[in-house]
Length: 325
Image (tube, rainbow, N blue to C red):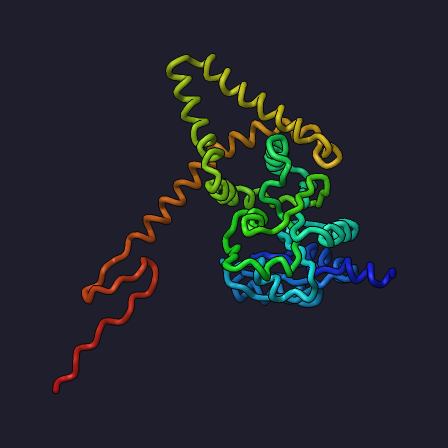
């Protein structure tokens, strides 16, 4: 009976990552291997970086080269050695007990989504924690979490499912009929990125929210509304508007911290207004990136023979003249 329980708790742990990896990730994956996990690393790094990563990761995982973008869910299901699969970012750090808890939940659910939290907590990590708390204050389901788990058999009936570039694969699975168990009371640690990486991720995070028009419209309106109130009503009215938004975000963060106080220090609630300010700027940053990308794609030079090619792509060779008869 004890052996059966151990087999039921075995899973495949999949990390999707890119770029140079640190020794800490290899040590972490090694600890999971010792716990009985089948470990796979999807590495979308350039060949020279992939070879460098392989020196550390090949000893603790199956190190697989992939080309971004790719469907991490389908690819993981195709390579996993077990029925239960845990998919996580490279900065997530599960404890063995949390792996076992997730696997136990997969006995009765097709998809399990725990709540990640940041530790340690630099100031930019505090802003991210403020975002998590505000979301928890509005909606108990995790917001585009860094990890989730699923049963491979859940994909067998999902014809047409594709999570390539999906901002929230869990919501995509739910849209295809998967039974999702969101566990806001099951906490998994996530290490914060360095400051440069966090700054680079700001427009991408805002762009991911474009699938929620109401949320994006709210942040698009924040700065113009403040400027309009400043022009029409003066500094006092504009300051009152900003103060009301800040107060509301802190109240939501305090509400979201309920049941999570052990993982979110009290000070993180006061980072919520900073997150709202950051997101109100990042939505415009994301919009500019979208416009520039669309302009680059639609600028398609036309060659003399009528063929087209994208800017930056090598032009096809000119047509050869027909041979004389």
